Image (cartoon, rainbow, N blue to C red; front, side, top):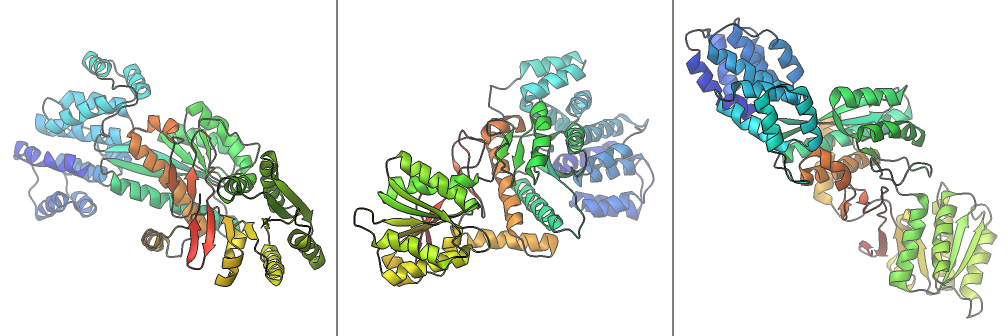
Length: 516
């Protein structure tokens, strides 16, 4: 917005030379403004009397992304010479556009576009960029025949938009319960919000014509009505949140009614919809890890006999069941053993012994052990110890917990290890360090996994927005084919409204290698 404001400044000064206040304060303010030091200029202009000082106070506020404050300053237009009145009107138009009051901005720009070249340029850019929905809203709000004719004559081809006009503001909501700082949930909420804010800052750096603003929506009580109000007042184009599945259920009717995408970072309860166009679930279902590993076994390892160990009534049990059902449907022999492998060493030893030393016709080629929870590491350590003691060439399959174990090179040579992961393990040293540095600058503390998730969820959506140019096309673009490798969260939606990207890695002495 600053360039549009500065380019017309010289013409204004020449046109109003007779009425300009003359003081050292005024001159310092103009120098600061012309150099882009808008905050310094704002303070100096506020110390000078007169309509010209009020005008440049408002210009500084617009340049500082405070258009609401600028409109308050511009409330009373001076009955001064035409040049000052025209610039006053133009600056009001910029502030109205920055508050997404597009119809009023067009009306004001039309009023002065024959006098101010920048107004004429911005007017044409806005008219060309409006979506069919925005165009219809503007037509309902504007009764100026010439503006209506321009709106009707310049509708872009479906799905095709020019770059956003300079000064365009797009608002994103972050809908979380604003909980007490002393509660553990507060740290999760704050980390997610900070990650989203950093993704927004990166988007703004990549897109100088657009300012993406981030607005917190406290859904602690009456969340649906609070979000409805925020969508209406802030013209939110997308929303990140919430944490819990029950909160997501309450918000979904709101975003559906308003056609606003809801990006759900963590909640993934089975009752949440997987086909609603406005809702994207970034956390895969628990069963998806088992299905991903089963597909890898079928497509890449081509095994025929697999043993499955699962702790009863655990998340790993769900993964194991999905894995088993997928392989059995393809005709493989799968020996599923469900029990309490954490408390009874003999149970696991007996099961593994049967798998590795049974009759040749039943001997298993791989063991899949998706253990989860506090005992997972101990269970897996016990498993690999039993396998090593028998020095049998068997493939070890599991989830992240298996990958966290220390596997010596001789073990990996005899017992290849493959595991799924809900995070992207590809090396991104420079990107991760840049994020960590930005996060430390913003918060003074180290980022957590939730900060990375907040960034990756928002960055995924904002990069898709950058592709389509206009937020009204975002809803359909969010699930377009293609994967997104975040800082830590791998993402792929395709035709699904739930993230189904679960990488499978092979552990090698130098680190994990992506296999799917």
